[in-house]
Length: 574
Ligand SMILES: Nc1ncnc2c1ncn2[C@@H]1O[C@H](COP(=O)(O)OP(=O)(O)OP(=O)(O)O)[C@@H](O)[C@H]1O
Image (cartoon, rainbow, N blue to C red; front, side, top):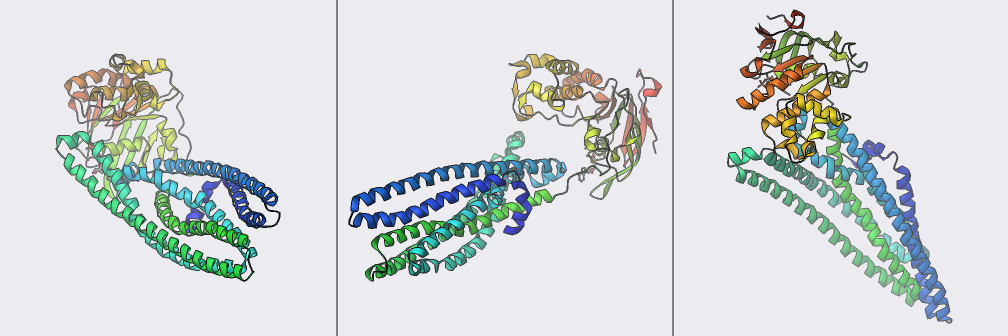
């Protein structure tokens, strides 16, 4: 991505900070102007002190110089603070927008990129982009204006000496272009290695138990070391380029200073310049070169930041998953709070591989329908359609007759609760975890849901009860306990439709026995789809249907269930 393309793409994120950036630039320019005038005064200070009425002239000029310096450092302070506030504001805005977009991508696309890579893009890449379009650009403008001011002042003093100093500028620009191109390549490699390191650490630690159980710690360490080697090589490459560039600039500066001194001394000898002016000129040059170097350095940092800008733009360009249609409406809520879910001739393919090939199924309020079928039959895919996480390729999924494809995804999920296969525990207290789906729930609501989920007893036995802080994934709890916390979270949402995906998959007989009652409580009065392979849990279902070859193949109305006929689901098996 080129510099101008990056600026065009990301400049909207400067909104709200532009005024601050302009003010910061003005303050920094005031500081720079004071420095420039200060050097001018220096020439008079020296010439004054060497002149006839020596010390009184010196005192006045020295006071003026001190005043200028005080203004300069104050303006510099305000400018720097303003620039930092603006910079952090831009980073925050960019990160918020990027994260909001990433949250709307398909989960499979998160996994494909790797969570480590996403972390790096949300942190260092994002800061580099801010530098490119925000403070970096501002510093460039200030450095250019500053260098121009110094050059003008030097010209006023001695056009010949300033001309000599200026002659070096095109050379500097050419050298920085050469190093900038090389920097782009090494930065690509460095960014990609940084992402791989984060991914390796995440993958190894997320599956720590498996790593240890399979004795693969060394392999994980070797993988990280390989990524680390790549990163180190890329960083060394970058350091070589930066150091090489710095050395060339440093050498050039000494050469130009020597020539300038030669020309300056020659001018002093011929009376075209005073000693004070020569001192000031060398002072200007001492200030000018760091500024020119800063301008030239921007070529390098732009090259680096452009790589990051490309990586961020790549994420923003990824299409969001199941966007709401332009004419999407909120899904109406029925007066009695119940929901009839119906799938009619539903077809769905993942990456053009057909999974559902004409599913007909009706789920009625107050009934539990167990959905079984071989692994890979499409049970979770069907659940995703009911949660409006996907739309069918053909056919309709409706709730109380309203097509979910025409409803906003958010409003559908206000009426449907999914209890996923693996109960997800977030870092935070037990109460916060339970209230995750309804953050405004009172403590009494949380406790009531926990009682229904059969979780209250073990929670109150924890060191701090509901305020016990759980680490990410809740590994300090048993599988059954995690599952019951997830159930309490689902109960608390009070939605008319409930989709339970393999709620007993990882549980032993004792744990299954413990959660059957809470499961019944959870399903009470709701329209429930229970995806399971587990014969221990189908006993609580009113009906069991089997999904095979993309269709509902068999229906079994479970005997002995005390349901009214109207509560029983209707299927059209093929
Ligand atoms: N995001 C995806 N992209 C491509 N193919 C997918 C995706 N998700 C699922 N599939 C494929 O779709 C098919 C159905 O998957 P699904 O997870 O719905 O099956 P399932 O019946 O729930 O399986 P299990 O009982 O093992 O959980 C499988 O062949 C799976 O490989």
